[in-house]
Image (tube, rainbow, N blue to C red):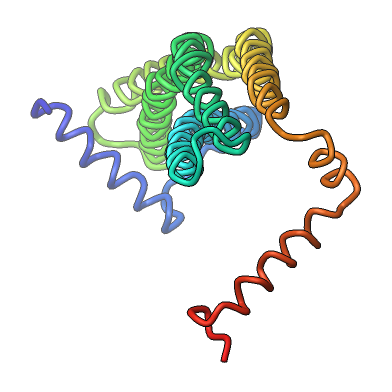
Length: 264
């Protein structure tokens, strides 16, 4: 920071303190305040959206990885019992389907998701620091304007013996007001435009995300549905009829009756 910038910072801090104590009048612009409030909500929502979108991507990767480990264990479990059994073939088919989902459709969708969802969100969030810098600049210029107005009003109320002070204060006031008005009007005009553009900007990303989720679900249903052909028809019928729970409980009871499981 330059020496001039340092002095301005000290001066603005003094102005802020004097405003808090009521010694300098604070300019209140309701129109700007309303637009800034809506912008801040938009900024917060975009940041939350980017975080959620990344969370979704990470969760999908974690799910397919966990599903892969689960399939590996089930495949080993059934193959160790009887590699030629229908259950072993079903377990192997399940493992193959899960691997296809992970290495195939999962990897296939990773790049498009990054390009059509994550990158647009990142670019939008990269705009906010630039806008915030303009808002901060506007606020600084407002402090300069309030200080110049206060100085001018004091000289008008109590003229100085130096006849050059009042014209100089008037000039400082007019210049400070001109700079502030320019930044203030620009923000009041362009902040709503930025918010209006959010829908056409995010529409393609939203559509792409829905299409990719749909494709992943459809591929998963198709590949995992193919595993069902390794199960006997009566197994599917028993599942639909809610009879599998009774069968599982029956086998579990047989296990409990074994001596090593605690039977006396």
